[in-house]
Image (cartoon, rainbow, N blue to C red; front, top):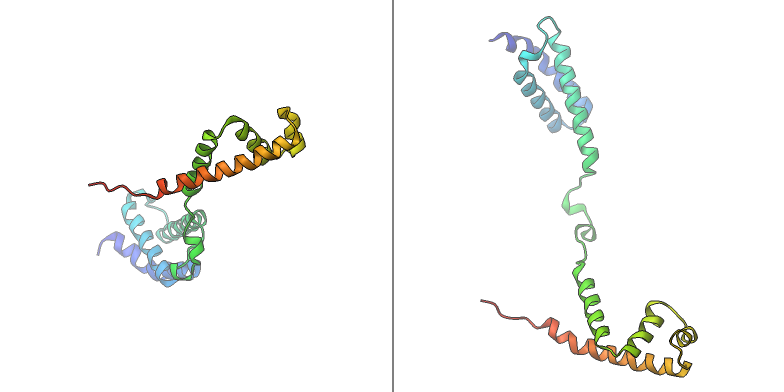
Length: 172
């Protein structure tokens, strides 16, 4: 047995006990000891020849455990997939909202200016009918009429556009 083996082998049971006390999981403790021994062997030339090998190995083990705790804290808690609610595993697609928004904007662009202005002022900007009438300089009844006709045309435009989006094209 080499000089290194003679110095390391008697310390291994104590390293295992310390690792078990630190992580409280036998499998993880064994991994920790394995990593400690690998690091000690790889860096054997860096230890002080007059230093205590036992304390050096315990320091390596402790530092590895601290590094694992830090990385686990950064990653967050882990749980088996079977125990996690399905709602947390999926995210609703964002593109549907964007497609619907684009459809509405295209339909708004096709409306006549007087209808589009009334719809935007009342529904988007939240102005009252009276405020909209003052802004556009038209009677209140005209605002209500344009809003009603504009909403109907917008709904018609949206209904006409819906089948176009859902049709699939065959690509070879």
